[in-house]
Image (cartoon, rainbow, N blue to C red; front, side, top):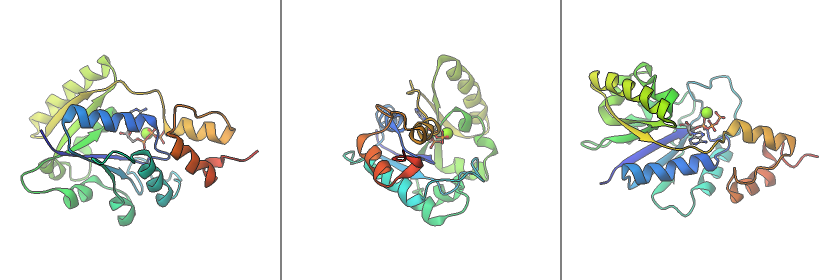
Length: 201
Ligand code: ATP
Ligand code: MG
């Protein structure tokens, strides 16, 4: 099997949960290429202040270093503005080859409402990542609904790490440990650049 996946997020900062998901998607979906795509501004996070795109991109590169099948793309950061998926898919789609778009449960449950969703659906498999049996049942129902709309969908069961960038930012600001949450080179980058209030007494 082969295929290209897209894993989008704000990655502010990228953490071990993201890494685990990326590696598992490669295995479960049989991908030979996974594009990690930091968003400029997510349509769902408009108004939220982010760390610079350059820093988020640099941290993603450090986190996925040593995995030749994973590349970090600056496509959405370079485009700027709100990162609409239909624009990204239009740029990356190749005739006759669908892209695998990784979506967490919240995103999967609303893909049909995304801007130009039917256009996106022409070029992608929407991969719904479910994190529990309960979520799996909910996503399965929605997958049936999306299939009836003509969308290609796939579900991917996944045991997530209980980590979020929000919690990591909070811990860094308070000077609490991020052991096991961040890859060491990413942690070093954060401290050497004084990001998230790290390094302050
Ligand atoms: P924030 O707390 O700022 O929202 P986040 O940790 O949720 O950050 P995002 O950049 O928003 O990270 O997420 C990018 C993608 O990674 C999303 O699809 C999200 O579902 C997934 N993801 C986030 N945290 C985890 C985790 N711990 N395990 C697996 N996947 C995760
Ligand atoms: Mg999030």
